[in-house]
Image (cartoon, rainbow over all chains, first blue to last red; front, side):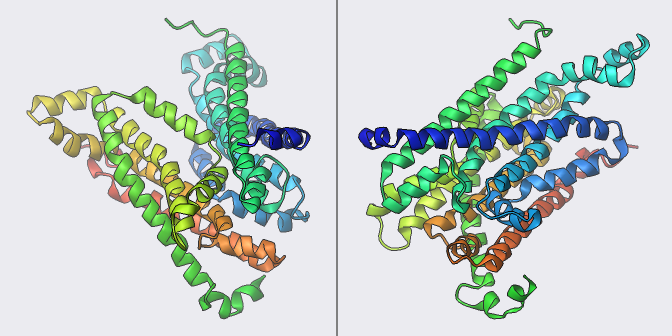
Length: 214
Length: 226
């Protein structure tokens, strides 16, 4: 490890970290914002639910590098445009989260729903005040998987030239120089761990109603 | 785009589709078989005994955060000095592919065995089956859907990562994307990306059929007990 090299590059590495953060977090937020209403809609239609969820599941099987390359012609963007990475990861996050939202809504006990209905909750009010809050633990668990895998997938975008921590890997390979590669891997893991912790804390804060274990 | 696919040279030439597809499938299959050979017994052990569950889940989560692309490049540079010729990049790539495939397979086997109803396990014990018979004749057949689903995730992960490994000169469909990017040949890049996506979709379909066909009729819940 050449720490002097890392120090001399600290400005550049800082900007790569911020890019990495931006490219992994924005897709999660958009994906979640799309997955909640669509998951709610699908859950209300049990007949098509299985089919629609498996079609969304297929999106998740497309290898990341292939998706990064296929999006520019479809979106009419330049290959180097970071928007391709944002769209690709939004697709993955959405595909993962829509299933989680459905699972979460399924985890709400029927008795609870019926009680809410009997108390006179209107559907939208019931969704935001009863169903969604009770689905938070399951959605939070899915969000952790999505956040952590996004941080790892973003680094692949270095192959098409988008700036983020993966750029340290390609740079290290071209220079046959281990320091940037190790630094990149460590920073990716730290970033994934930090975002994961953030999701755990946020989920706990939203789940104060849960009985404490132990 | 269609012109690219119409040229016969793009199919059967030295760097054509067919040889690249064969390499991609070949490396992926080798990695998958090694991963199954290692992870399957681990999953059987933790599932059957219930020991080491926390460790298994912890390792799985930790591996998920590891950037596979960085890991490949790190291993290629570290191992390059010890091997001659092609082994210098093939071996590190296979190692990374195997490592990435271990957790989903082990976890699938483990979760499949654990999801067995305790009553079934007790009944098997009650009629006098030995622990090994319980594992092979009761637990594993019941766990088949989750085992296959674990192998499916592992296979997709391997195929996806093998594409990226083209950057360190591993053969396979990723070559079309990486070389196309270097030469600004967008037709070739797009062709490579389409093929990789189609390969992944075919694998996915293959596994959903395999689940349907391999699950014992009695426990598939598709046959009504009369």
